Length: 263
Ligand code: FES
Image (cartoon, rainbow, N blue to C red; front, side):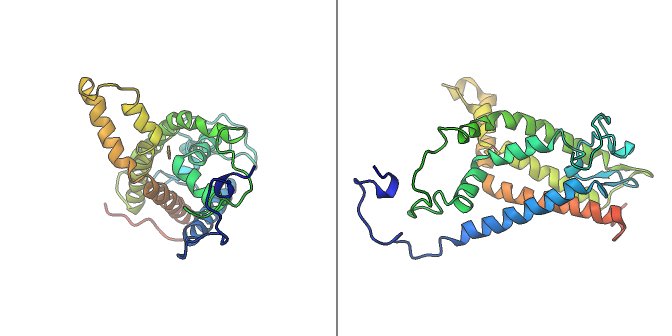
């Protein structure tokens, strides 16, 4: 028996949708944006060059933590213990978990279900597929692992913060340049994205019966809830800040231009 908008209990409407607006613009832009970002990130991760500016200790987040035997010793803040191979990213310890964190993110799920999978493309527009099984079966049931990837992403954001702090001490001692501003801006936005996660909201305020008996958790939950309302924006902004940070460090490292130094 057909389900969804074709279920017998639903009104039989001949046109595919009654929506007259350009509802397809958002899914189309999502496809373009995500595809472009994934293409850029994939190329950069496997380039295995121009990821560190030794003079200012700038390390791109795409190579953090740098744990491969191929990493420059100065860039390997946590040691080098991974086999050096062109098909193994230098940050192979963090990148898979970050990918899983974003893939299972509530917002990104909505984004790619609507745009790539047309399931459904928009409200009041039928699903692009005949059947709909949701996230209750293999493989999408694994989306429920999101809460665990949150803990790992939290640790990786701490590592990115550590990298940003180290970048204030270059070869000539303390200094501040445009690279520092970009690294710190990226880390602030990464925290905004990570802490605004729905799982974080549950960690801070979930399973509580009486907020009045847990005032500190209530405060954290209020703070995280406010951030949570902007989770989609942070999801996109961090894609931008990550790519910008990586590109800037690649450009300075490759000698395309010098870092703008403030002092
Ligand atoms: Fe988006 Fe957790 S990171 S919901």
